[in-house]
Image (cartoon, rainbow, N blue to C red; front, top):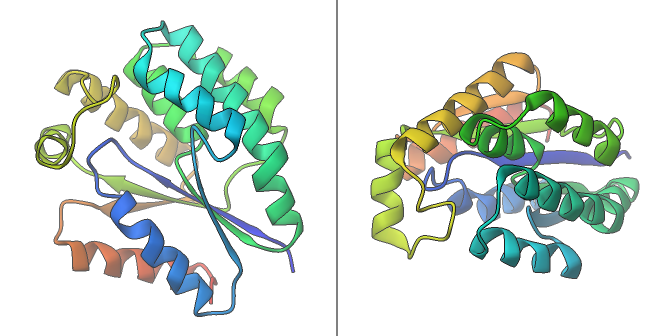
Length: 204
């Protein structure tokens, strides 16, 4: 049985992380072996790069190169082997985040990001992307109530609105892959949307 690759996307504070474990459990109860992972991160090397990415000042090109370097190791060591074993990989962020944050948010060259995407991923794309969509102002309120901000989370509302627009552009370009989740609803209603998408995409 071939593996499946699910990614979870959205601006910081959209609440996606609150549902990742429930999503994995939903799949496990239906007989799937699940690998939970995240980006940047997922391997010792990629986790080290994540720490640099979140806490060291750098320009947009350095950010992009760093996340793609982490992604390459992640794909080679975790994602591709799990898919080859027929497992379901559930990843908190993937390349859509790079296009949204570094591309739309930072205004970085989308053509160069697309070239890096091709070099690093070859033809690998998620089978399904759940996009937790939320206005930047609401997300900022949630972040402030939940945790201390890292380097990216301290960005302006305008930055996060551009990131949100970047996600919308990626979703419009790949509607067969993306499923938009209204993350402004109560948590139970958000989960119901997730479960409905999973059920409709033959993850049973």
